[in-house]
Length: 310
Image 1 (cartoon, rainbow, N blue to C red):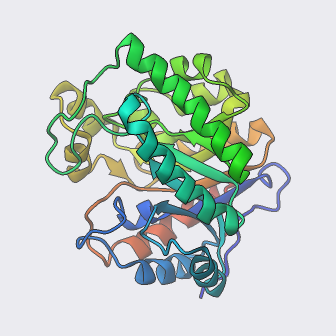
Image 2: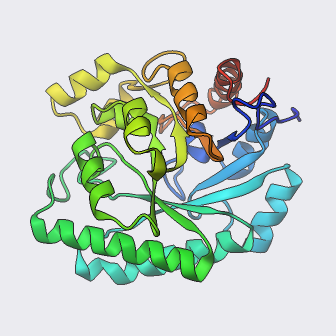
């Protein structure tokens, strides 16, 4: 097993800790026959030199906190976050969203996590690309989205000691810089943080460095990944579903694509705050032989930019 070094000892970068999640192994769903089994992925994540874990789709790794803790301890991982999908803009969906996030909160509080990442539901089906919801929320739906984001964040914080962070995503209602501005202006910063997903911000035609500089106090957590700008441009011009863009190679391994990782890591270092920076690359489904050597190369490249050590 490779020795993992999540933090660079240089004071300039020492508050940034690199981590990993199942997305870097091509995992989008709790269960799917096209995905790598979690036991294999966990072994390979440790071999690749990681020791900080965001657990990804709830149910991919064991839900039982004792078993989850045991598996993570055996592989040398600290769990820092869980992840969940939940509809916030429909009143009839609240009960299921609350139930889901309470289950995630209970498991992850028990294993010492600090964050829960809220992934927004997509308005297109991830398998077929068909529309399943409105592309743009109406005034009433948007108001409910904000109300329930604050409500869910408060539950996570007060009942489980977890900071909830909203995550931008292609084909969702938090995609563009304008969407993100609306979120920052409307939500309660005591209960709602932001997961700076650099790849999805690029996919939404934004610049993550600009967002860091504009809203430094709201950046709570980071997903670091890159997108091919030419494929992103084509995806928007031809109105592809996000899943179609992924299948055509929009999510790429740094140093390819955007953002420029050196510039991004410098901007994160300028924040001078403790941040988990979780490696991701959207590649569902993928050749099972691909993630391990790819993740090693990415981790080593990011280390050359100051994030972690080789």
